[in-house]
Length: 436
Image 1 (cartoon, helix red, strand yellow):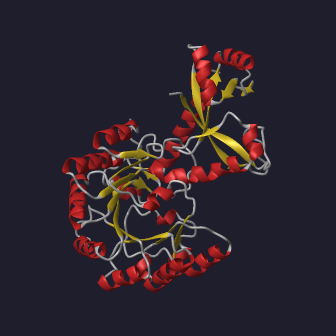
Image 2 (cartoon, helix red, strand yellow):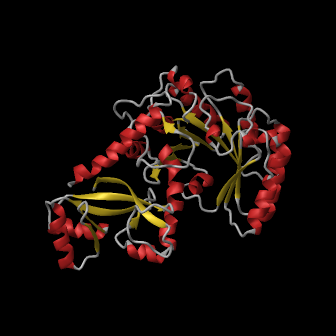
Image 3 (cartoon, rainbow, N blue to C red):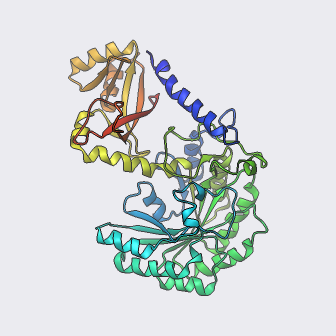
């Protein structure tokens, strides 16, 4: 089996995924219109940082919470309940566990924080979200005050649409120790009370240390989004988070009547991601990149961060792959694997088909540790060794194998045969790509 034949299984999995998602009522675009390579090009053209596996682009300023989100280490998000004063057609809260339950039941977020502290949890970023958290201002302020006592160095942030906030509420949040407030602005909702929210943001600039606008980039709203950036810059807003717009697998009719389609190749690597935002919508990323370029041309001073759907998923992969480094036996069983410090996956080089024999002979002669799988056949080896192999055998074709640590089901015999101190862990290959 050569590389092309081996990759067919991954292509088939993506086709099956697309077919399953389209059953929700929204089609995929026929050809990908937002190639990920454009991220690097845009960053170079407008002087942006392009980080986290080219999934996060930002200029001038970025919230420390956004940086922490890339790994999820020492971060936590709390909510009282999932009730909200808005009815956004693209809301993905219904994808959360126990959504219906938390429409009528509340959580004690102060008690949850205290319990985490008692168990030794360390936090550098704490967030309160919803629903709309300011349906419960007393609980929110009590949480912030307790967080200041238990974690005085932690960065705290609050998500709100602003409908329930006033000047007094802002002052109470500031006195309780809030570091960052994030306002949700939906530009296409022109008659949705946005002028009042801008007035609140102007007041917040002089009250809360960091004021951020967080908004999905809805295709077709480019003109309104440019106005949002200019207006936010004039107010002295710290930054705007541009989110890749996603279909949350419900309300398909609302997306369809607006002419939206799903992004072809929606994820850098197809996988079962936990983030409930859904599947990216075609055209959102292209407009987000244009907004970064617009901000550069206009010389806007505020921070702008494009947070792609890929960026939302790196924390999960990082957390799953921490087990690889926490288990020396598992790591020793796969010495050819390396952690990609950008996208957080575990990677190695692989030879297939007729190239396997030559690669194996070279590895044996060079004393290189590798993994020969006669069933494919294939041979895996470390990237550094792969470079030497390519120099020794210039015509050889190598691929990049992309992997993540998973928990083995009790009756599952799949995965690599090598186990570490925890036999319930194994490496799952999620993609094989041409080697750069």
